[in-house]
Every structure is written in C-alpha cells, then in structure tokens.
Length: 147
Image (cartoon, rainbow, N blue to C red; front, side, top):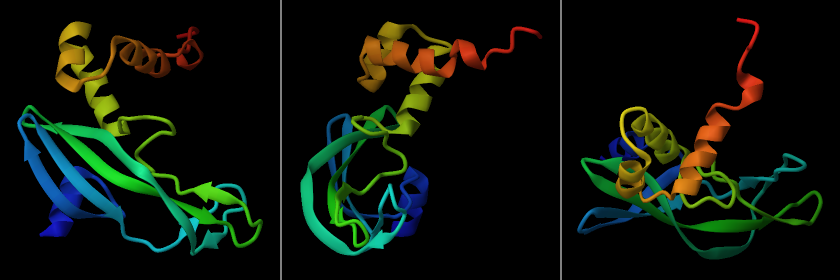
C-alpha cells in the first residue's frame, strides 16, 4: 500500500510517516529510507549522521484541487573521506526552493491556457517565481535561430 502512494506521488527513496488533511491541503510527513548519503564533492558514501535540519515544508504537487505538501527534515552527514559536513541532496527539490520540480512543471503547463493571476492562486507560487520559471524554460540560448 505504501509503495503505491510513493509511486503515485513520485517520491522515490522516501516513506510516508503521517498524513494530515487540512482543508485544501494534504500534508505528508515523510522520511528518507536510506541510512547513508553520498557526498556531493568526492562522491563517497557516508553513514556518519551529524544532525537533522529544521523541518522543511515543500509544495510538491496538486491532487484534485488540493495542494500536497511534504514535510521532512534534511539530514547532515560528515564525509568519511574529507571530514567535511554536507547536507543530503533531495533529487526532486532544487536547492533553496520551497517547491518541487513537479509543481513547477505543472505550473508551466497551466500557464499555457490560463493567466498568471489564476496560476498564482492555484499553486501558491508568486508572479516572480513564475516569470523565473518561464525564463529558464525558454532561454535564448536554447532557441536555434537558424531554423
């Protein structure tokens, strides 16, 4: 049952600890399955857990007009090779972001047939973030002007 929820929500490597329904929000408390993490600089695995960060509340996607939030604590590890501290990277959440890649893609698709105002209300993403997403998606370097 739990694996079906994880594949539906597209959160590999996590397990669902708690589910709360609050009005127009679904809040999932999740936790990483693995006990180790890979250092981003030297690419070696470490199992020396230093501490947990404060809980992060990430907007992940929308399901039937309800926003799905993931609440989890990022873990900080000590690299066994370099003895430096690093925060475990999460694949579907960009650094310093409060929304996942899935909700950003969903918002861009929504912009194709609705206005900025309705998209910001639906997803809770600001106008500035939407314009940044559009600029990233349609950067001038990716357009082939010869065609």
